Image 1 (cartoon, rainbow, N blue to C red):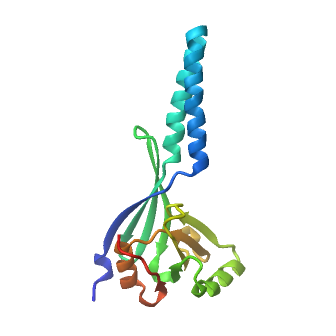
Image 2 (image 1 turned 135 degrees about the vertical axis):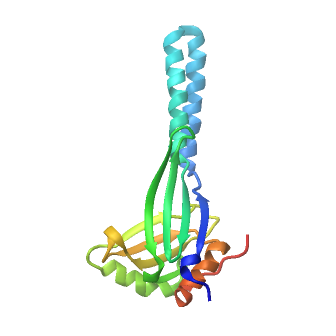
Image 3 (image 1 turned 135 degrees about the horizontal axis):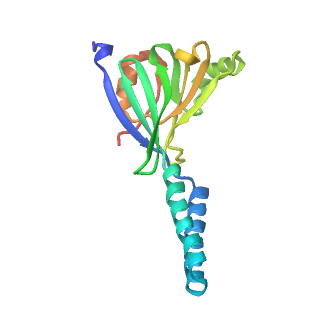
Length: 186
């Protein structure tokens, strides 16, 4: 039997950049090319537009690249959200989940989630939903239902998350009969 206080696990999940963001990125780079071409004819004003658009694209893509860091310390799962550019990174303390208050954790769409979904949907005050998964259709995600802690005390939490084999082994250790997930080895 492992002591829960000795559990310490860290993992980073990169969020997939959605296709509409990539389209915006291509359009911005195309604008830079057009402004640069027009700059050969009209000079300095187009240079300002070209460099301004290039800087904005760099900043925009820095904000679009998001990763979630899962930190498991004992029975407390904390999720940090990392975004921003390399020179100005932004880290946000996003979610705290006490696994002792976990109701159920299962793959998305499984029947075992129906009771928790109904109970959390009918709850007053309303439940809080977090999506800290990779947002990738090729990688399935899991759904966790638990009761909130701290400022979310007394509220249901519904959390979409990416469960990997390493995290799954600790979740099974902490919440034995509440985890219903099958994750293939990576």
